[in-house]
Length: 274
Image (cartoon, rainbow, N blue to C red; front, top):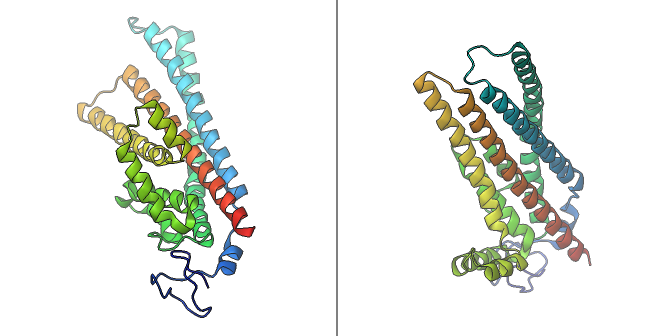
């Protein structure tokens, strides 16, 4: 049996490599464990696009509501027609928010499940010495405090193990070195990074960074409003619109990451069968 780490031949009954000491991987066994996650991946992507549609509808509603409030901010009494329109708009937003809640619950199931399946496929493709197990790849989303940074670490590991399953740690080190050496604001350097598929680490970082910033942004605003004891319609609309905009950017980064990892695993599985 050949070691996937150092390519040294070992006895068929051996469990660890006689040269480097890593756990040996039975290639035939691993191939049989690879599962096609196309349906799960595209279902997740479609739900994420549906959430983007919700955010766009929300932004449109916020802008229209802002226009109505701004138009009559110096008027003591709102025109009855405008007041009716605002009430209808609020009812419409209530329905949209209920749809958002359903989409959020679906994503709460699909995203950890996708992490779980991708982790198992990475192992099936020959990735060894992974830090996170399939189960913990999913569970970290639900553990308070740890879910602030653990999911991004899991996703980065899944990306590297999908890109180069047998030598993913070496690939990760090379990518990190290139990130420190190259200037991301230099167009030629950025183009070179895209060609080598290493800009994805930045995409993953931006996805989680925007997500965390959005949460703290909303929490900070809510705290200030509660502390002051007053709420301003214009400020609320601006905050909600900004939050939805951040959400759209974050989801787009996640879709790019999911698509890339899925395609890399499919390519590696195809090469493994040849």
